[in-house]
Length: 239
Image (cartoon, rainbow, N blue to C red):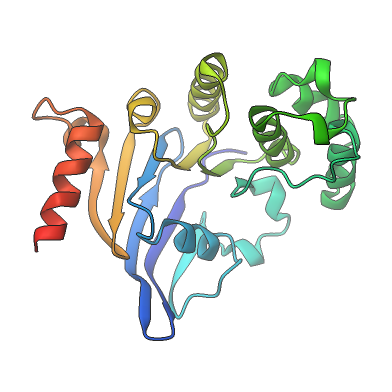
């Protein structure tokens, strides 16, 4: 289907007396790659978990084309998510891991071979996951997220463990996904690489959105993404 936007409106979450996320509002549009950036502890992971229905917000909503994740008729056909590197049993093979999740999601069985090819794990799909490198497990996580042929990808640090060739592959894959009408929301600390990958930026610090806009707008002064990011974070810290 594609053409599915992400709408986050006034998301708020407290843990005891600590407000981890406060009135977070942003949109990620189809056909674009949106970077969700911020320091450790800024509220990124909590926001992504609320977006995916894993953490209940105290206030606010998060929607995919106007529908909350938990109300989607077939969530994994709309949203593919990678929040952690695949936790497949070390004794199972990647192929069997994918077969299990394919069946659980009610997806066609031929999707297993398709996603193995997409993430370029063909030569390793029948090896036990316990022997995989971090980068190979990262590819397996992405393959699992792609089983439902989703319209949206929500990815947390997807380049972790990838070698330089793998990082280039991921960049091209995400661009092709967006060009085909897909929506990508990606959280990462690899700012140098993100500058080559994203169209839009959402910057969060201390649970608050401090900047949203296009990458071009953020770097219009000639800054790199990293320089602009550090300038904004330093400004917020000084307030």
